[in-house]
Image: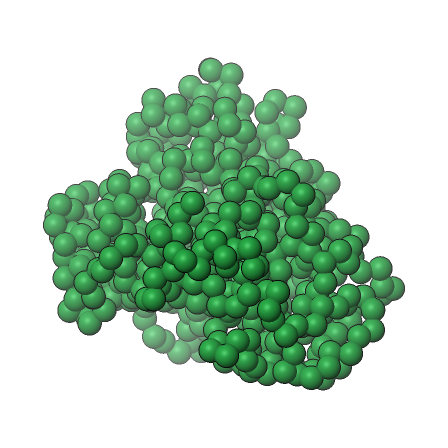
Length: 600
């Protein structure tokens, strides 16, 4: 049984210790325990612009943001937090402020004097990342830990003295060379990096901190948090520190919302998470709208479980290491096969097929691949004994079984594993089609959470979206979810960070400009990073990177290797296109953009 949550078949919120941020009687918050999940975001302006920082903070608070993060890249920026906080308090705003620290311990010490929370990234707080390969002896590794303790301890002591809180937040893109050489660029490396800092904090009896494990890849992010919680439980009952959830560099629009829903939503459905941030390449208040909508879906998508005594059947998947469930390859239609090593297929209802099929061009990448009503399928209630029949039969959960969809399909996969059967599985985003159409933004979140959670578990050989009532929208949503989880690639994939005070260009404008030139490049992944903090590492699985190197200057990467430096911003998109051409990934656009013909 999974050790990362109460049960993968029955929702129960993971109980964590309380972390006090500020004065709860005067606008502060308590994270963890039985307290509601806290929503947070980050302002995007220069930290030295006091007036703009105050304005953006007040805008966030006005839409319900409960924690506001501000970057402090230098001691000078950290010192100006005093003025920002003073003006906010003068205006009656008591929402706690989080200082975001990278690279400079002295900036963290200054920031701790003025704000309620200091966020540190273990990967770069005491280390400079050089992508160096080195074998560490036991003695050398111990010496490195001693050096880190020397740098981190002053902040721990100051936070304890002033009653501050801390976030120990690792990023997939910014693990230290020492961790990379010992553990690799892995979820285990992220967890161990955070635990090293936590042990230092505990050594000084400081416990007012929370953890985060962020990645731009939702599957990696899910694995990291599961492994973190498991490791904390192994460390002991008093290691139950709160968890902050987020998918970093999620991007914008539907893609950003889908990635965030897959990563954050699936973990919330397992009972994990005490505070969340949805990172979008959009104006920050939009993030809070999505946070609120996301949290509102969890009660609809969880339930009392399967009614089984004890822990339930053994899972069909390893929660800590992604692997697609093994299934037999079968024919869905005379021309389309699923299961085995085939891509996860997209199924639609007959009504959707009739409406979208006439609009599909012969070369379209977004197309229905089978009609639900025409499939040779078996629909079962996984709570009851069933005979899966031939492995040539596609199997799914029947509607109306009274289970949450995630629970039902996990149970189905577990039952098939116990029976030793490899029937391919058709996933549904809902087991009860809404009587009234859902708002598109809600349908998107629900489908992304359910299908994304199951696909991240390795379950599913085909998907059916019915919560979204629009035929064209439901088809595009299915493909977008598959792309977000890494199951299909039908369009260009973008890793785009949200803006912050470190950003060296206008992310929204530049992202739109890059998309306009490259959105036809199927299978190409482009990272758009405002600064170097998470750049090279977070771009490790991107083909190309566009990174702010200095004001008005851009560095271009192939993978995590910088290729061209200090390109004037006015020329940078053209130079990016040239780089894509040089590496044989370019093709000329033709016709209408993917999916446009399906617009309702």
